[in-house]
Image (cartoon, rainbow over all chains, first blue to last red):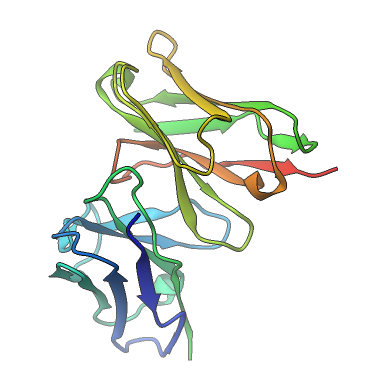
Amino acid sequence: EIVMTQSPATLSVSPGERATLSCRASQSVSSDVAWYQQKPGQAPRLLIYGASTRATGIPVRFSGSGSGTEFTLTISSLQSEDFAVYYCQQYNNWPPGTFGQGTKVETK
Amino acid sequence: EVQLLESGGGLVQPGGSLRLSCVVSGFTFSSYAMSWVRQAPGRGLEWVSGISDSGGRIYYADSVKGRFTVSRDNSKNTLYLQMNSLRAEDTAVYYCVRDRMVYLHWGQGTLVTVSS
């Protein structure tokens, strides 16, 4: 089973600043990585798939990059509604499609 | 509008059983694979099970294999998860999600609590 490791566990950022979240796979997953956003009491929301393709309706301030074992989600200018927990997921070696443990983006 | 509505969660004793249902609308159910993903309280996401569009191919996480059974009724637009021999570590919100690997559409989740 591929292990996805996210860092940092918590990221403190001021509104308007840039946020960079990292995700590392225990072995190559090509570009088969998705990113999800989850707010308290809500289901996760798909942001990015294929490592860099934004899902329908996702603002352009969200961008994904990487391939192989190293992946990044960047939020170019944090808005108040972006404070949430973010999960990466690999689906290259499926089943199972494994998730990272999450990065919480909080207000600095 | 795509909608997925889970039901069937609740409190159950260790060793007990529960059957979750997920009724969908807004898309052609029989054309899509479906999955279950769970989230323990305060924890991350865990894929549980997946089923192909016809129901002919079924997959389980090792943590639930032999205890959980996924099925679907395409005539009723409904996905099921039969959970037997429940353990405390199965306590989680269970989400019904569309598709096999990348999850654009999620239900609101149903809470399963396994406790004596």
